[in-house]
Length: 215
Image (spheres, rainbow, N blue to C red):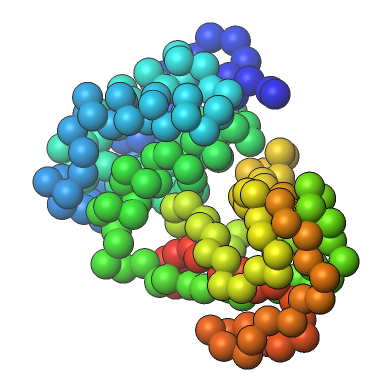
């Protein structure tokens, strides 16, 4: 897995850009954001839990920037575009995962929840004849998912047989969610979901992909 940073991190360009973002962005209420120490601890814990390969030095740098902008409402952490602009010459696919899976949970979903649009995308796949132990990859076709803010969640609405696990897979180059990976524990003979909760009969097992966008 590729490292997020190559060489030594130079905070100079990031802080120079940071200054302009502070004056061009609309701040949010600082009291809705986590304290700097909590942000650092939870970001590190999240990265370790989700096995996101980012160096400790990078998280320390991100935490340092966050501490500096916290009194102003941390506008540079409000979206991926603003966040990535701070580290554009150093950030990689793992950096996008760190933002979407960890930082957005602490910042965006907490401070900007009132202005985000919840979305639900129904994805179906015919598991008929799929044996137990099989791995199935279901491509995602969800409107606006590439512009999501925060994490992507999966809720099985109807499954033929039984699943051992299911998870969203991300493109290793750009960090975008591209597919749903499921592992079957009990095989499916004939997949015929009921026509309810947005599922379409005869299209197979049904999953709700949940995420939020800013529009």
